[in-house]
Image (cartoon, rainbow, N blue to C red; front, side, top):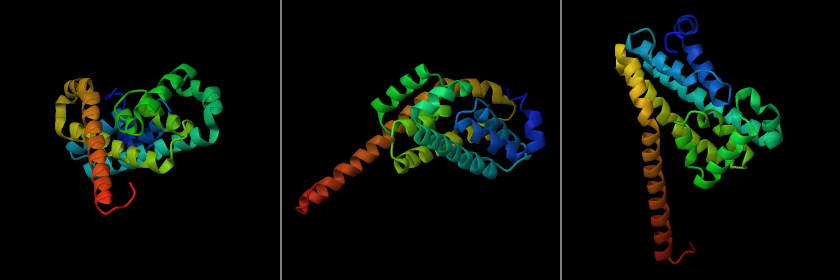
Amino acid sequence: MLHTLEPTLNHYGYLAVAGLVLLEDFGVPVPGETVLILGAVYAGTGRLNIVLVALLGFLAAVTGDNIGFAIGHLGGRRLVERYGRYILLTPERLDRATGFFERRGASIIIVARFIEGLRQANGIIAGTTGMHWARFLLFNAIGAALWVALWASVGYLSGNHITSIYHTVTRYDLYFAVAVGVVLVGLIARRVLRSRAERARHGQPT
């Protein structure tokens, strides 16, 4: 896949990175993650700028997911069930993913970024489940930043070993995402508890 994308990246450069990442992130089955990695590989050889690759990847990822969120929020489940098959989002997959989101809460938005299938559909699913947009935007931006940081670093530093490194990292990227999610949830919970304790000391309602 990396090699098959070389002509596209050679011809379109940064536009290919931004475009494919954006399309993938609102459900279109295109190799957005792969082109991000290849763009970072090109940056490692001096053919592209790694800062621009990472920045465009992040902005495209957040924008794509928010387009998906708008589709899910405005169109609802009926729209997804009618047209979802064109982006490989069947009613059965939607049911499973929706249940997954409802059980895990907003923090799953971060983890979903690293899971094939959920990465492409998480915005649509969040929109159909009625999640508040500001909450989705926050967790989505965190997930996008971590995802871009991981794969841009892998591509930029890997050089000629990208294929073997890619296969190794994909085995553990979910564990990385889960670990990050746990840490973030712990930090948020700690801050909430401290805030409540502070208000309690001052006699304010919690």
